[in-house]
Image (tube, rainbow, N blue to C red; front, top):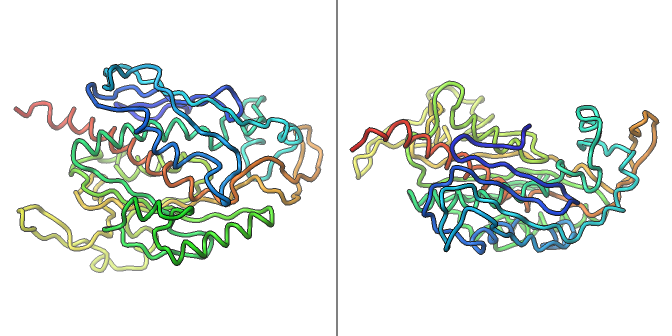
Length: 364
């Protein structure tokens, strides 16, 4: 019921924020892929709480355990189960929120749909659910890297009205990881950190935009009509908590251009490959990857749970006020970067397997 993503490379996440643990089942992973817990842990460490003064102070190591599907360091082709145990839950912080709905959170809609919810830490509506996605994404990244040297780099592009200047053709993981806000524009990053820290002290929150570029993408990924690659990517990243908008290539800015201005003209490069002189399509044309960089942007709203007093109602229909307690990110963007990368990797890995199954099965 909404907990499974993908077709051939298929994941199912499980667990609640304050339960015994969270994790993922990965089905459809090709056999004989060398993978270790340490490789998965790298991205989990980028996602984990308690990283810095601008993230939630919840202290979790998010240590992953591979409990099936890997033998002697290689995948078996059978389901891979990865578990991360919860260690630092403080459920008492949520006592008031067991009856009072947090404005713009999932409390009221979960009650409306199911008639029951795990109010401790937000349950499945917590961003802690994304641990399973990031763990599975690390496996997908390695498949893509091994197949075609595909490189996926996400970064914080904007916080509120502070926008970074980033060359998506050259930006590196090292540049992204050089500061706690994960913005490769160092001057802008300093301003972003100060802005987030100030809003944290005010018990409020901020939103922004994560941009993600994928380089060395094989041509031919994605299907026409309903399963266009940009549609798959949009669904994937928009399934992340706090997302409110998606763009690819020129995005909404393309609406201000004429067709002749917006079109990506073709040429033949030195290797005889068909290329485009510009990339306003964002690496996808007709729903299919064209080999150029895929460039997407995702809008994240300000964190819903804030310490400022706001009007709300109880689950019994009484009007009241709430100043939420607990430990929450004043801005989700720095920790959202590996989440976006993971969802992009899962889509591309799934589409890669589909491409080979349909278009390469008869090749000798």
